[in-house]
Image (cartoon, rainbow, N blue to C red; front, side, top):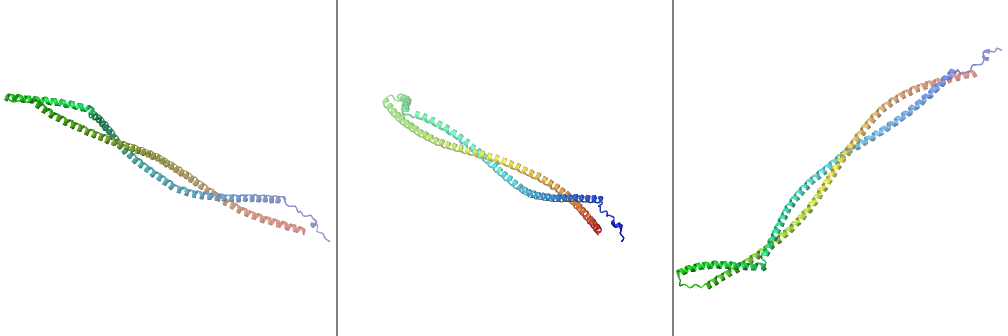
Length: 336
């Protein structure tokens, strides 16, 4: 029996330590690459979420911009309406001011007329008092009688002088003529009594008519004065009402001007805010586009890295499979 001593030599089944280290390093690299790949995948998902969020914000701000742009015509229409109301109030204020001036002029005219009526009434009252004193029977009749007697005596004296002159002439012409002085004096006295009675009656009638006329004048002026006072009171009430309307119109005008100013300020502030927000959104959009471009670039780099890693993983897998197959084949041969 021959024995092959080489077969009795123990087999060297030790694994190369370097190969184990290389395999360990490859496993660590694969783990690191898998971790990096998972991190890149998470980052891509996060960037996709950020992209969706930015798109949502952009859509929201676009809709808000449309709403704000739709508010601008409303503000302009409201401001135009307030301006028209302010113009109407100014026109009403001018009209009321002209009416107030006209009423004041009319009131001045009535005031002058009232003063004239008061002066006329005072004059009429003075004349009435004077005429009443003159027409008083207890005072005037004796005076008239005394004046009548004085007139009669003066007239009789003048007539007597005339008769005496005539008589002297007659005496010179006819000395035989007989003159009855008693009859002449009685006749003249009767004539002057008649004249005095007629004058007295005419004077009393004139004074009565004058008194009645003055009474009617006083009554008429009193009625005119009463109407003038009523008109003045009515004009004063009208002036007060117009003054209140003018003050109310001025207050409304001031309020409308303040509202117009406030609306303009609010509109300008809203437009300025909208412009600032639009600029911010445009800047954010630009930044989002830049970020998106960077993310796309990084994503492409990640995909390229992933592709390389997939290739490396496939290569490592083939190497591992080949090494495992080689080891399995070596171990099987030893068992045989």
